[in-house]
Amino acid sequence: MAETTLPGMVPDTPVASRGYWSSVFRRLRGDWVTIFCLVVLLAIILSAIFAPWVAPVDPYKTSVIRRLKDIGTPGFPLGTDELGRDMLSRLIYGGRLSLLMGITPVINALVIGSLLGIVAGFVGGKINMVIMRTVDVFYAFPSVLLAIAISGALGAGLVNSIVSLTIVFVPPITRVAESVTTSVRNLDFVEAARASGAGSWTIIRVHVLGNVLGPVFVFATGLISVSIILASGLSFLGLGVRPPEPEWGLMLNTLRQSIYVNPWVCALPGVMIFITSICFNMMSDGLRAAMDVRA
Amino acid sequence: MISYLIRRLLYSVPIALGVSLMIFMLVHLAPGDPISAIAPADAPPDVIERLKVDYGYDKPLPVQFALWLGRAVTGDLGRSVATGQSVSGEVMSAVGNTIMLSLCAALVGFTLGAGLGFVAGYNQGRALDKAATAIAIAGISVPHYWLGMVLVIVFSVQLNVLPAVGMGPGGSSDWAWDWAHMQHLILPAITLAVIPIGIVMRTTRSAVAEILNQEFVQALRAKGLSERHVLGHVVRNVAPTVLAVMGLQLGYLLGGSILIETVFSWPGTGFLLNTAIFRRDIPMLQGTILVLALFFVFLNVVVDLIQTAVDPRIKRA
Image 1 (cartoon, helix red, strand yellow):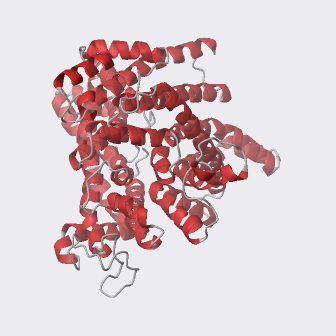
Image 2: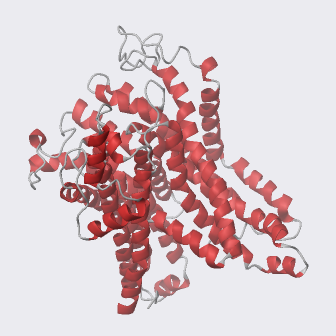
Image 3: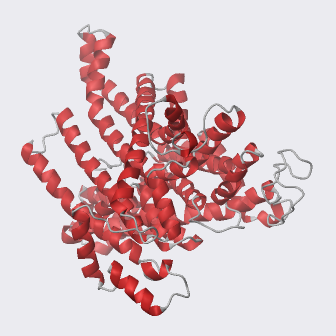
């Protein structure tokens, strides 16, 4: 983590800031894999947001006579689940909670972690020690174990899952923010700004934030896919949302009992998690390459 | 080296203390105390009070922590409030199963990951590299609990060649190294092996690519060394980085196995943890997490030491 110096993040010339972002945009435009993933993600996100209009039927409507229908059944293109609910509609609705549970913790952690990391890196000394040693303690847990431990202690539920995943992602983001801040703080232009009379607040606002947020943001986008897998994993264990809420991990959990009846319908929610997570990963890689961040 | 070893061990003491404190506090975040969580709603207050005294939940938190820590150091993690069994006993037998599963998964995952990474780094930019990178991204992105389900669907439901759940024939939990038991290990180990493949592959790939770009490799080739010997030099230079990542990944496997153990009903710590959570069995929860986390702390120390031993350039003493 110590070598998080960022050749591309530090503007080469005093007027490079606009040039940098337009070159990032230009590089992204030529990267069709990233564009494709972005389009897929947008489709999933938009259909989740507009689920009531997109989904063909009510995702909660059960029926005893049409349980576990095959993929391709007329009227139910992706079959039905163990209670006879339309899979396609539930998968579309499921995106709402799964994405919410996956993305919110990363956003929360991005805010909290950057704040802690920038303070630790900029102030240094005792405050740095307290913050970073606490972070070390959290690093002593494998992330899955930490998430399950906190969720298990707090109990099941949407908010508790988001809280536990936020706690999981704050330490890594704090570490990245701290190491970038420390390296930026020691650069000549910060010294120059201080010599020319800029106060700490101005230096943080202009120089530190400007150079730290980019790499931290790219790092955080890479965490979204982990977060989505973990969030659905918590629901899969029964620690996330409760039935009958449509959520991909929970759907996998309840459908697991039916794999001997209609195996491929039961695997569908996992396909959604997989697609979403792989697209977030590819997009993060593309963003990292375009922004020339080595984090 | 000896003084580094001692300093590294001393440094992990505050971490281990912090971990214990966190685990202790964690379960007190939950609403209600551990006894009222499991006692029937109509239990008379005096019974609850006596249970609290029995389990030590009547004392102030710092005292409880000191007592708990003092007992934990001597290997006593208390009794399960759900079954009354000794926590250490149950955790120890489960930890063995989890470690066995994780080691098998590590063997498969690390070999594949390092192999793919080496091939990709050596053929940077070519089709082989792209294929290996695609496998790595898929490995990182796949929800492994779902992959476990898919493997069960293919190999147990459709082909009917491998058992879907459990650790031995007829649900036995006594392990033996024969085919009847080992076929239960195949699916969970492969599923779990997918977790480290991506990370190990990426690390190996970038380390190999970086070493190959260095001038000494050119010098070796200019000297007329065969490609096999050049590769030998590359391996030796890549080893410390890759070993460090593998060590950490082994720790993540122990944590990640929780979900896989649930899918395959593997009687390990994940299974234990899952049961403890749903019974709100606080001592069991604390004990299991403590053992796993301390094992991870210990693993980190070992990784650091191995890295120092393998790479003479790291002089930390």
